[in-house]
Length: 319
Image 1 (cartoon, rainbow, N blue to C red):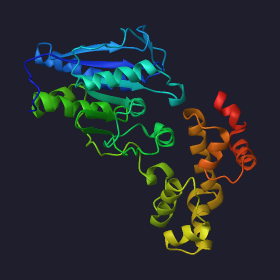
Image 2 (image 1 turned 90 degrees about the vertical axis):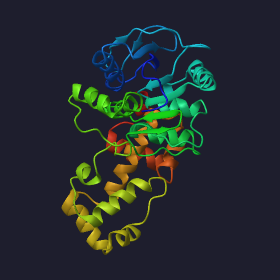
Image 3 (image 1 turned 120 degrees about the vertical axis):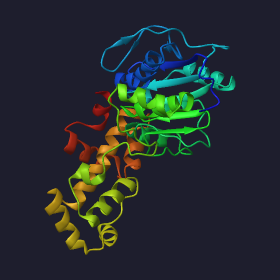
Image 4 (image 1 turned 45 degrees about the vertical axis):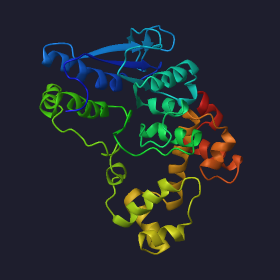
């Protein structure tokens, strides 16, 4: 049991940024509703906020009634900010000011899916262990180079809580409910949602490389992992072959046999996928994105991008 008083009602706020993912929001709020039901009384009280106080529209088009952002003396114990879509569209200075004010009042601050990006923008993640949805990680690293998110489903670092979103809030809420009400009660809540396998905080957000690429050759997996780690400064084929413990010619055969492509094409595809995410989610210019993904010139980057996606980088940003 934690220092929270399980006999009192704990008020939890959710600040919904337009375009938030409904699944992430539901995975965080539904366990609290079930906890009230199973306890036979109100132990959690939810308050829903939006930047302008109007109903918040999710990415799927579902509208959630909301109130204006909380002000001083809100009575919140915890406040989560939920965001989805593109970080370059999250221009909400009022939300950042609100998060800072709540933090000064001792409110526990959390972020779900893209929410940790806004926590970072508010200056609330310095020196903290945190995570963010893997799709938003590249934009966060470019915007806040001094911060490094962990590849985890969720993280609790003192009065900061961050979660990758999706269905991971089910795991996070299991831990938070157990913290307050005990593990047996938390298990009852998770069982209510058939959530019989609760993941550890550090469990991965994505499938393994072997599952994503359909490859099980250890040397080839080592090279694919290094490709994803060296997007800005690509390594030469000979260096990658040494990582795999094979000759350069043998490495070519591995790519042809297991992936049906070449070493160069696979490396370029990984870098262009990263560039596509940055175009959608970061405020970086096209030239800056070309550099960040290891291309020697803007013209070369644009030509390769068009060859894969069929449109120019600037057009992809406008889609």
